[in-house]
Image (cartoon, rainbow, N blue to C red; front, side):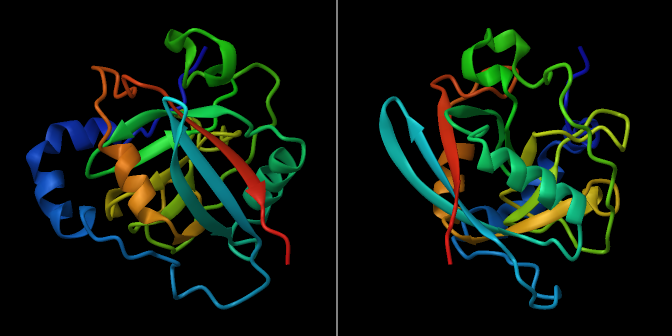
Length: 207
C-alpha cells in the first residue's frame, strides 16, 4: 500500500533545525489562522474533538473553503455526514510543522498500517491555489500522485511555505489552536506516531 505522507517532509528533515528555528515565533502562538485573503462566502464549520487516554484534550473548530477547493470540501463534508471521522487518530505529529489524521486504518488496524489508506477510497484531484500553508491551515495529505488525496488531512501548527502550490489547501482554523499545540507536542516514536494515541471525532456545526 502507498503511504499518504507529505512529500516535502524529506526536505523538512534535511532542513532540520532550520525549519524549527524559522517556525519558533509561530509554534507557541495560540492565535488562529483563517487565510484572510479568502473572500467571505458560505463556509461550513466543523468541530474536531480530540481525546487522549480517555481524557478530552479540547475542541478545534475549522471552516472549509468551497470557493477554493470545492471537490475537497465536498469529499470532507460527505465523510463527516456518514460518521467516517468517528474515533480516528492523529497518526503523525511533527512539532514545528503539522498534525495529520483521517486514515480509516487508525480506527482498528495495527499501527504499522496507519497512514497507508484503504483500498477503494474516493480519490480527489488536486485543487492547488495561491493560499499559503500558514499556521492553522487545513490541507490534503496525498501520495506522490498529486491527484491521490482521500480522507487524510493535515493541520499546520506553523507556517510551511515550502508546501505552497504543491498541496491542496481547503480550510483553516477558527479556534482551538492551543489544542493542536497540545497534540503536536505529545511524546512520539521514531515514526512520529504519538506514543499514547490521540483520537478525534469530527462533527458539523449547524447554523
